[in-house]
Length: 164
Image (cartoon, rainbow, N blue to C red; front, side):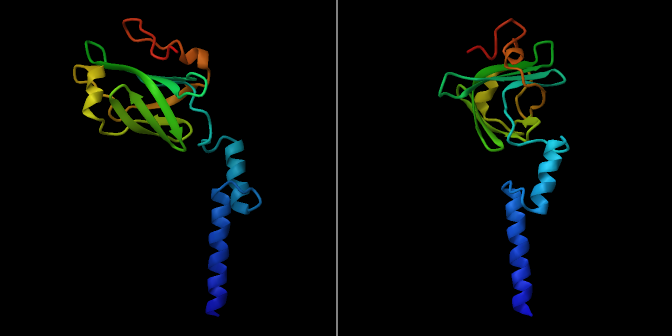
């Protein structure tokens, strides 16, 4: 009897693993594939390129040099001398984004439809900010997958944030 219970538990564990790695030959895998196809859950494998925004916060990601990292620009604008603006590079590893704005380096989370900066950022990131603004906990939603639209993001002074 104990052997039968152990065998059932092992089979259940294997079927969950198959669904998690994208095997659509299992009930869980088919359910996940159907949910992705109908847009019920975000696809964590989707591209990060495009325009991102929430309220007055903006982010752009465009292709970098061939064989290089993608270019990223971020803008936090609270008006009246309160804001941040930075440009740099981003490398995606699964659901994590390694963002580098010169000496400011952080790891953000990407869930397929949203990018969320960490709640605490290194002190070097303050060099890109004025007033009490910060990149801490910046959260933006996908607005467009268009690279040309993303490339139009500019600082209030007119500097391009995602220029190649």
